[in-house]
Length: 93
Image 1 (tube, one colour):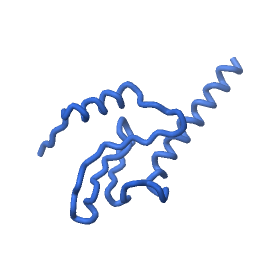
Image 2 (tube, rainbow, N blue to C red):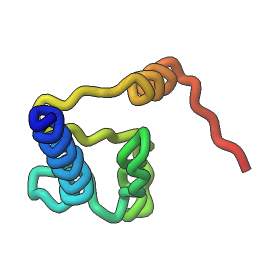
Image 3 (cartoon, rainbow, N blue to C red):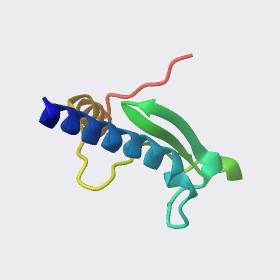
């Protein structure tokens, strides 16, 4: 019982650290995109990046997932990545 509780606490801390890292990543000096070009989503994809939009010169739209340490994409994130890579993306009004 104690082992299960300790594991649950450890997992909770890791999850919380991941959420905080996702939110703070754009503030890091080495972050490659301007903070004004970001739209935080936080579920399935962390950010949509409208690269250059703050300059009035949109270069590219990117889906951005922030990962820390040894974190890997989960199944839903992999499916989204594959759909984007296959061009299965559209725009609707």
